[in-house]
Image (tube, rainbow, N blue to C red; front, side, top):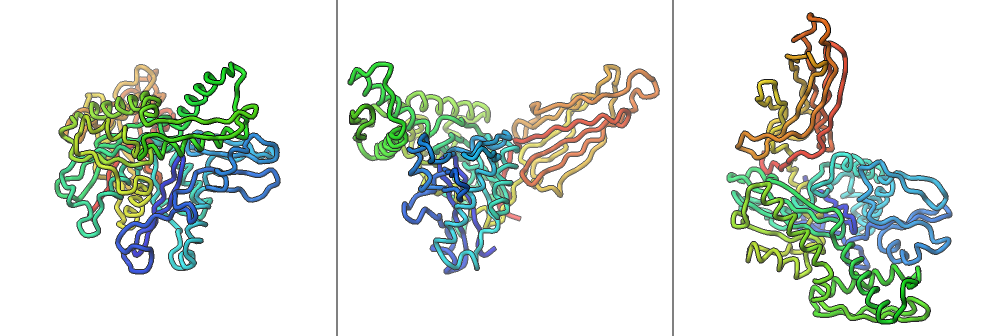
Length: 504
């Protein structure tokens, strides 16, 4: 297609990128182009502010800049990190007492991205509208979350074209070549270490030897150890020092209107420490006319986040152990996300991978750019690990093969016999192949259906009709029904091991 869009919907910041192979559409022909905030030249904060008077909500930098007034009367309600609340059926309460579903708040962020894209160039809305987009999600984001993101996008007027894991998108955004595509990575194994403001996502990926496919070998992550949490650690550490120096005791508390500003100063210091050895944090009148003034050194900052670095390292080795790989078997290590720019992060990884560790070209934009490339290339998402039903003879009957494109058209129905109904239940076990090429399967869910056992004529005659349907959000849903009793059970598999078809 001539143009396409990708969206990095982030916990902390969000961004749209476009891709076109035509001259004059976006700024760079044949390359992904990220659409920053026009004034800040930075991704848009995922912050939404609702007013008490029914006005249109504020989103992005305008909302974030007023968050320090969140506790003040008449300033409305502020919502940040709404992504963490998706997939849980949560609601939020507005200043007027009305309630919104979390995905409805998220839709304001998608609407803002769409509006800002059109504001950046007058002819985008008419000639190159963002009617659909590939959107990225964290590795551990399940199907329920994807469904709610899809709802949010549709409400904002954007059709969800496909979902791609954020580390996958980062890999594509960094390594993609307009002519070679990903052929230069054929047969290579890549670790993507994506550490942003909200989540840590790790993904081990491999490109097939013929260059036709890229697929996950495994993923891992941590939802609450990221840049936003680093800011809070700095905030608490420095305030504890300040309180001790001033002998303020247990009654000390920062003036509410100053909390957000001090937190933002901690964030700025964290960012600057990627290049500087120390940074000053100064804020006036934070408590009874006392001024806050502290110097944060890079060494102190690293010490503050040591527990986070340790957790990330454990996450890494858990992933390597699960996939059966050692660091020497990994060909490239790519750092993405704002938190990955912290020198201590690269230093930790270099102790295990050496010179293989590289920072993405622009860690803040590479995920959105990768999503735009996937959309433009029309690369299709497919299931990479066989899904099977465990039979009574302990063999596995594959119901969703590796290589199957994850589209509703590939849904199937199978019939199984219940060979032993004496317990009054027919047990239905779903398995997933642990690694492609071996015969080890792991249990991913089970159902138990009521069946007849009292009457001999029902024994060994019960049929279990099982329908395996694939949703647009990449969820595999199994509905099984007993022919003898009519009992029906449903099981949804939200986490499939996926890959992308790079060639027809």
